[in-house]
Length: 235
Image 1 (cartoon, rainbow, N blue to C red):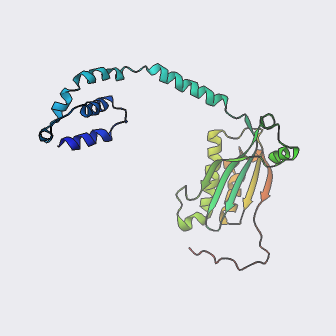
Image 2: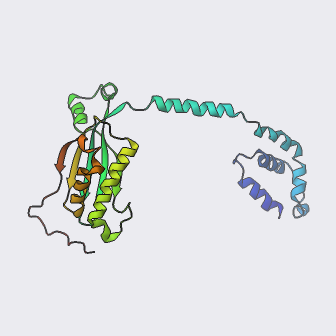
Image 3: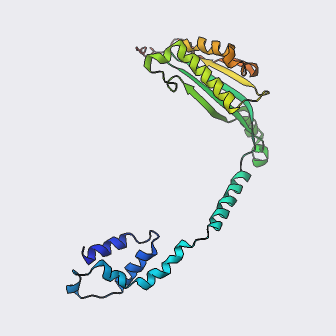
């Protein structure tokens, strides 16, 4: 390997946190060699000039890790202090029953208890709009495809029943809904999974959630006239 190739490789690694290589490149710049000896310069001869410099670099291993741990601890405390003071006002359970699939989601309607104190300059109308349109955060989502049903199997009754069972079981395992929480159930479309979801809700699978439901809404869109619809999907 020639001197020029070695020097270009060393210069390319400068600034990467290696003081030994930085010392080598510094010594190379201060070394003047005749042109005839460049081709016969070896790596060992270069390292002999920087043996005294490399001995000082052993202090890198003696790093005080307590400062790093203290910094991480302080940053964690800051994150805890700046966490939002929120509470769940209402839970919304969306169940969509397509012709070819069944989807279910659990959404939390969240209120920031410090919203008025943080936004004192807002107008009365802006404050009213915030409480009329509270933020929605999705906590769970289950579909027939996630449970292993493929293609035409996703549209069957069994797929809709398994989606409902998985949703109710996950809610119980994670203890998301308390005994006094309120749930709004929102249905959409009229696939085969709709009847299966209702059967799971009225059966033993939904006995721990059924008492929390306070409202049932049908969000199915009805078409009146308009342009020609897209052709039906065939499976």
